[in-house]
Every structure is written in C-alpha cells, then in structure tokens.
Length: 256
Ligand code: PEP
Image 1 (cartoon, rainbow, N blue to C red):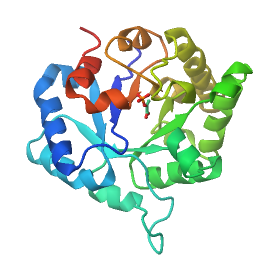
Image 2 (cartoon, rainbow, N blue to C red; image 1 turned 180 degrees about the vertical axis):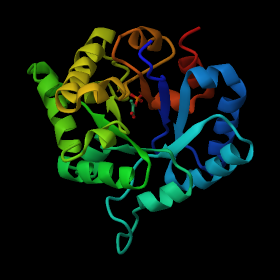
Image 3 (cartoon, rainbow, N blue to C red; image 1 turned 60 degrees about the vertical axis):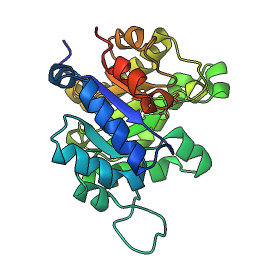
Image 4 (cartoon, rainbow, N blue to C red; image 1 turned 135 degrees about the vertical axis):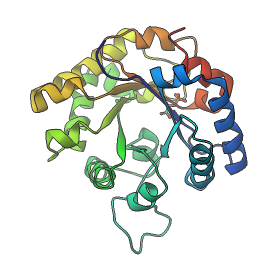
C-alpha cells in the first residue's frame, strides 16, 4: 500500500527484428488480462528500429502495454550521426527511455555528466527516464556499493527540482548481476534501493515516496516475488528474461 504502481519493464537490448517485436508484443498483450495490466504496469523497451511497429500495434489495437526506447541523444537535433532525439521518441508516443544503462556506460563511455544531460533531455520531452545506477563487482567487494550508487544518483539528478525528480524512475542494477544469472539477494536489493530512496528524501522530501525504484539483474520468474516483497522495490528492469514471452508474463504475474 505504498501508492506506487509496480512497473515491469522489459529491456530487449539488441534482440528481435521488427517482425519478432510485433510477435512478442502480441503474445504479451494476449497473455495478460486487463486486471493484471492494471495492477502492474508492463512496458517494453525494443531497439529503435522496432519502435514504429510496436507503437502501431499497441496504439492501433489499444493494447494496455507501455513502450519506450533504450537510449536517447542529449541533443535536440543536428549533426549527430546515428543518434535519436527525445523529440523523435516523444512523437512516436514513447513514455519511457532507459538512461545510463551499464552497457552504455561501459561500451559507449557514457559518464555521469552525459547521463544527467540525457535525463534532462527525456524530461524536456515529457518522457520518463528509467535511470540506471549500480556498482561493479570490485566496488561491491570493497563494500562501497551504497556510496557509489547514491553518488551516481546525485550526479544524474543534479540541478533537477523535486517536481522533475518525481517524474524519474530509478533502476538499481548491480553490474555483477546483469546477464550473469547471479541475482542480488532481496536483502541486497533492499539495502541499496532503501538508501537511494533515503537520499531522495534528504534532497526532495516527500517526493521520495512517489518515485518508483526498480531492481534489475538476472530477474526471472522464480526470483521476482521475493524481490518484490521488499518494501522499497517497486518493480523490475528485466533484460534476458524479457524476450521470452512465457517467462516475462510469469514475472508480470508475480503476485499470483
Ligand atoms: C538489464 O539489461 O537491464 C538487465 C537487468 O539484464 P538481465 O535481466 O539480463 O540481467
């Protein structure tokens, strides 16, 4: 009874062409009831090239699924070959965009300043950023995971007012748990997510109670319920398991 609606977001990463994207989206919509989709918000995050097809299907058939992108440019428009702007995503009806995923931080050298600029670009276009934060194995083993992750949160939200922070979704994704089959324990997830909410409360008061904070990292149908039972966990950002319709549907039905 936190008043925060649970959110299950499927990060497809670089998987599925637009035809496969349509098939998966249809399967999800038809496997979940209206009641299930009102209790839990279910969002798909396909590759850019799939978005138009997914949007046409979801809007055309009035499916109760949300959709968004995996990244955006911090710039409005111009000579940025290969990039996609927040304005383009907003025009396509995207409600969400992933920002600061550890794979982008690692393979595209995205630093905190760029991540903060992307958060701003999303908000400017009325798109909810799903801001990813989380520590690597070395930081965890040194016991610095809370400070590291809270520091990433501070950097990404720098300069934002509380009414903007309220529109952000945060995802705690320990890098050592992403795609590795090594899930954080529910207590590990709660420790950091509780600390993130505590920091939001320090900086933004009651707004912290309204911000949804997700866990991500090898979420599967068989571990989601225990993670969701933690008081500060409001949902999950699901990678690998989100491109398997049956598995993702079971994750979305974690309450049953
Ligand atoms: C992710 O990519 O955000 C993620 C959590 O991946 P996985 O579920 O595959 O660990």
